[in-house]
Length: 183
Image (cartoon, rainbow, N blue to C red):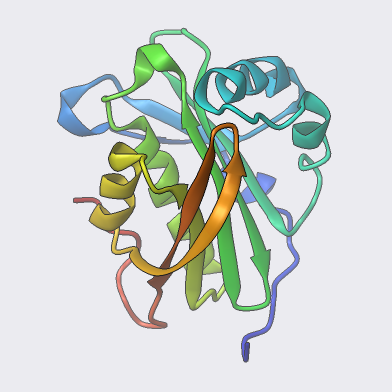
């Protein structure tokens, strides 16, 4: 870990930056999460994960300068349809959670949120991004692999409901490379 962590808040950095979703879907708005988003984020969390975080866990992330906590909204006024949480420590990052509402899956929302986390990581001088994924989660693994993540380890019996191994994946971010892949 040779880099130096920046501690400026991430909320101001996102500034409600619009982006077009893949596959010609409606544009997405990715912005910093706020307290008004917590109910929607928690509902997505409960739908997506068998061992969900509490609403309080998300609330504790809102003002932490070491955390990216961003949400995605579509312009059709359906509200929050996905979120990403990532931690930054010196020159490494961990994508802790990426989740998309069941009705919005398959539209590139998860990819857009992951790309945002990779963009922020690069801006913060991160050289390696890590994450864990269920061994059986083929869709998530395919997304992560499409963004250059490679398996570097296995955590036996990491998940509790149901008990399952986690694959540890890493993506190296070179200092002079392009921003997150969009393909």
